[in-house]
Figure (cartoon, rainbow, N blue to C red):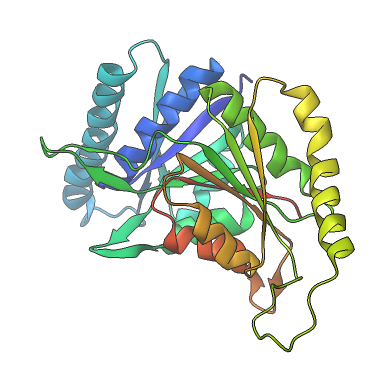
Length: 288
């Protein structure tokens, strides 16, 4: 089947912003957008049928309103709508099996910069085998909601552990499609001197870090020669480093490693920090 970009809708302004972001991305990629709303059903009985009917109508209105909005903002993007009866929000991931990426809204915590990451979004970020992009809403003067920080460079927090190629490929592709610079930050463990009696860091080690970063980027620079790349070594923790580069970015890209606990997979500290503190859309790329 044809690849597509899927958006999970729940009727919130954040999910509508995710749909708009996804439509813009689909336009850049020449792909359709599938708007998917899960209608969580109960076992059907004669008693609850009258109550279920208005809920089904409301679910249809969520899809219709989002479709109308996308046709207004991105009229050339094919839009597919699907109302999926399901008994659990976990049904979203199997339903998005043809998606090259999954877009979801994330609800901000009022004036506090952060995300209220619901169980569905957390489940998707931790388990979906393709990129998940989390978008929160930014209210315009006319009262409409648009994706926060649509413009600006693409930024990526890069770990040089094995498996980083998927995140780099996503980031370079996003920057190339948008015609914007790519800011790459790599957190090194070699911290600057804090006290005057501390031993200065070995300059050769700093150069080795810079060389390792440059060599990791070299194949992608050759593949995307039009992308202007800015390399940066941070002496902060990896989580702090990605938070620091998020302001002003149009998209922040982070990897999600194979972190697991007795309760199942988790997203890891870097992705967690990006999701909770970055105002721009955050793309979480699996590399288990």
